[in-house]
Figure 1 (cartoon, helix red, strand yellow):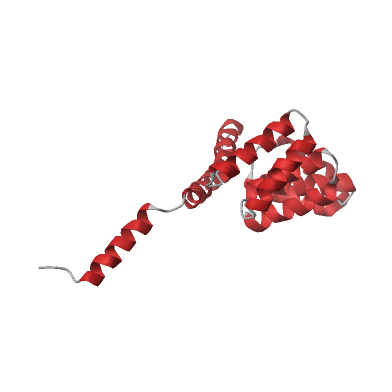
Figure 2 (cartoon, rainbow, N blue to C red):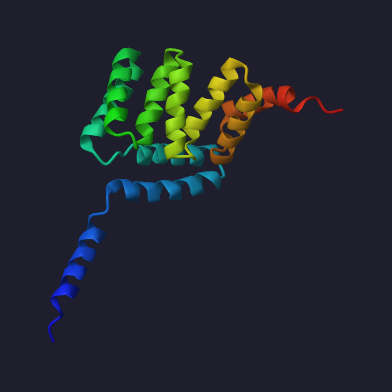
Length: 186
């Protein structure tokens, strides 16, 4: 018995869609799994391993050209060539505005040269695209902390610790800010 032509077209379309899912969708699924594992991690070593895997997933743009711009921007940051880094990362965010990790790297470049306004703007883009990006939340906390916005810094650091346990620097910042934000109990 022959299938009607229309059913064949629908089946072919469904097969094409199933096998052509973008890598970024698969990366997002894997990132979600890694975030759950990270929140439940039982040791600092396990958390560190999961964080590295998560950043690798977040760093997949789905485009070789955009991945190259991200790599060039990060490489420039590593050798303190912030102007070059900002150039590469601005091009990346211009061409791939939905790629959160591009905005995160750009925020790091701006932060490195103490351009806190543009850094905060880039971090807002990251968090609009990926609300659980603990690196961006940590950046928001650090900027507020540096500017003396203790309550906002405390709130952001607390969110980081929910997502990313075993961060001694964040724990230390929370302890330091607790007295200022929560007051002294008798």
